[in-house]
Image (cartoon, rainbow, N blue to C red):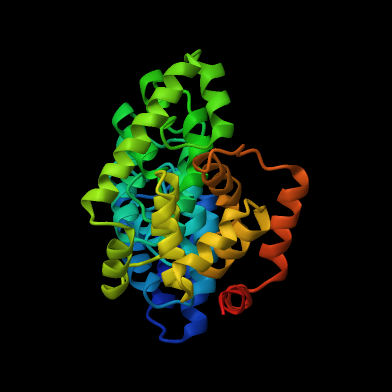
Length: 357
């Protein structure tokens, strides 16, 4: 210990901090990480304050690769500088990931702040943490990124309140890839599962009736009510053509709207939206989809940018609305997959345009 009460090694690091070179800053950064690992819990208050001050300053100056290396080394250190952990947690995802995954020093409020301020990639990492609390889950449930919502519902250690389950179920109307995960959650209440029957695919109806022992007749009633409500909303909007044209003029007509329309039983809205997005008369889309061929719907979905992960659910919904079986055979699934993998979005659009000519 030096006369001033500061360890000689820390004094050396302070001297290094006064150097202006990039190499010295990087060396200092990693030297402090090594010190933290080897002397965890062995700092005096003055030493810790000094190191914290140095690290706060350097974190804004060193290269991303160096920050990443530090984050990896201190992510699991229980007495790592808290404000440094917080700084790294809000850094670029390449730096923040290890801290967001493994650090136990981040509080619930701090994680919520990251969710509200950082990228979808940060949100997804947080959604996969083993200690997701009900408040944190509620914040994550408002993410605009489907991959974040999917990570949350698949995290079996996350604690999700009933109100958040309601929200996730509602959001699964638009993001249909969530539906299976929501229905599998242990927190899901039977009444919510029954209400979901009004908009999930026929394939999931059997899962719901088996898990919650719900009368199939009740499910048919829920579907009829949901279809009637969707039709009423559509009528109130003065018809699908006007609604779609209005959204298109406002620049708000997106593939997600088409997915949501079909998920809610509005097949005609889906057809008008697809026609507008592709640039063909709606009759061309209606003729194409009327065949009931999986490849036809796959071609439309590819042309307007709908991901193949939701295709099976959309196919089931469309065929059910037409009064046909919504079961997608393995052969048809493979053919549809071939459309998504072998035809680009623009080529799919051009194919439909040529057929409409």
